[in-house]
Length: 288
Image (cartoon, rainbow, N blue to C red; front, side, top):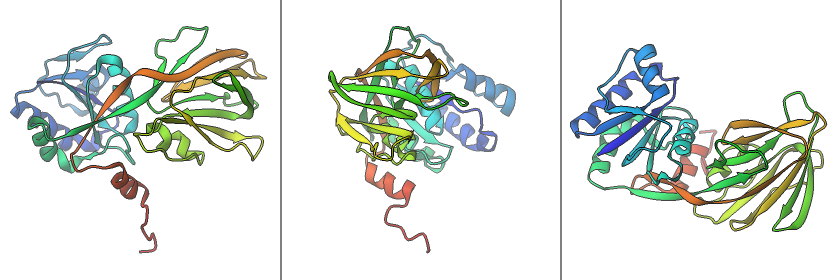
């Protein structure tokens, strides 16, 4: 079995977990490939480097599974590399909240045993695809695509069309187009609704809108969204899962569902509703 490992560069206190994971993979005779930045971090910052098969490059590699060690940001970076390769991703949470990286550091042995005995399930998660007159190296997002003003800029004007029907013009600091997976990320922080991962929908949520009646809108997953953005400072940002690109004012975009999915590895007894209760304390009395 060939497994690729991505990790964050903020794990000085997680060396015991990292060592245990790599030792476990060695026991199962796994050929391990490591993301270059994480490999450098292990070698230079932590001083630990297990024997690996090779370094993950920018090109496609025939891996059976990818492990993400960190938070949801690390998971998104792994998903960006996986792209169309149809490689399942398992997220070990060494970060904070973790809606994507859901396996705790205390569950290493159990999870590895489940993986190598085929006791797990996979969720297929939809992505968004964006196109514009300007070519971009990465034009897919698992969580969200956000049109945002620059830090020192005035609000931007975002004209939106849904399936060629005019929707509205958002006067705001930005507009988030989120997948069901991303509904618990940036979208949630601006009071957008939570969507069940299996929903065939997307959600539009304004960031600090000028008008208080600009509510979030859930749209069908087969919708095509056209966006025209104007900025007084002549440019603005487009963020894809936190990767920001600069565009000139007046640029047109098309946003729609991507023609491939990301496979997310889960324990057999794990459900999205369990995650909501645990991560967001649903139904819990915080006074206790």
